Length: 167
Image (cartoon, rainbow, N blue to C red; front, side, top):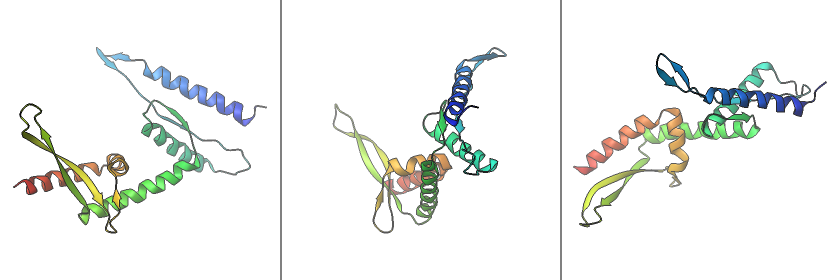
């Protein structure tokens, strides 16, 4: 019989081969189409008594980790993914409240013409300060906003706020 690491290596090899095969463009009706895939893998030792639905859930979580890492990847499930997912969901909830409570604010950065020294435009940079005064960096909340779809309402809010303040 084959042991876990050998089977895992075989499954990962098959998955990587599948991804590599999909990278090759396909011509359909005079159009060149490239298909991509992100693969999530999970395993069970048997004695951990994981249900098939739990294994599927873990594979799904690992697949999303593959997508976030740049797509066209194969990733094994890690318990860290669940901890990160919980933090992501909490940040998503906090952002929705922050948007409703106007915890976001724009900072304006002038764009200067290097030859004349005149300000030719202003860039609005989004910032978030929680009610307790703790700032949340854009590197933390922007990826979550993009993945959750909250980036569109936030973008609209920034546009409206910036236009109102420009008057």
